[in-house]
Structure formats: structure tokens, C-alpha cells
Amino acid sequence: MSRAGKFAAVGIAALVALQWLWHGVLWPGEIGSRWLVALLFSLPLLPSVVLLVRGRPSAQFWGGVAALFYFCHGIAEAWTIAQARPLALAEVAVSIWIIVAGSWDGMKARFSKRK
Image (tube, rainbow, N blue to C red; front, side):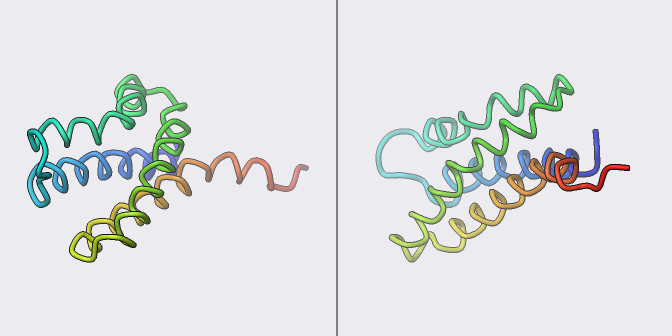
């Protein structure tokens, strides 16, 4: 795995941990079980986590696709709920981290000068 792939893997793990921390511990919802909500918010990352465990390079791509959802969620939460703004901005930052790290190798190959 390349350095960018390792950064993407760390970002995916950090985003899963952030979802469990946010929805399971720090900001439990009023409806339903807090652990069920944390599990549901972690589900979009499940394919990329499984691919990471299997050592597949496509985990970066699927992590980036899922991170687009979390980016939108973080922006919406930061805009609407002032108390959740630090967690939402952390979600936005980690999502950008995953998107950039997951795309880095492809962008590097695309724009590198060929000899």
C-alpha cells in the first residue's frame, strides 16, 4: 500500500471512530438506542473497512465515496446545530483528508510527466 493509501486507511478508521464517539458517547440522539444510531451512521464506511481488512486497493476509492456523504452531513450539522459544530467540523476535516488521500495516487499518475 502506498503512503497515500495508508493515510486514507487511517482516515477511514478515524471517521469510523468519530461516528462511534459522536453518536454513541458524546451526542446521543433522543430517538432510539445510541449504539444503534452509531452503527447506522457507520454503515456507509463498512465496505471500505472490509476492503481494508482484505488488503484491497479499492478501499481508498470506496472510502472516498463514503466520505462525500459524511462531508455533506458535517456541513449540514455545522450549519444547523451550533452545539454540534466542533464534531461536525471534525467530520468535514476527516472527510476531506480521506478524499484527498484516496485520490492522491490517481491524480499523481494522471498529471505526472511521462518519459
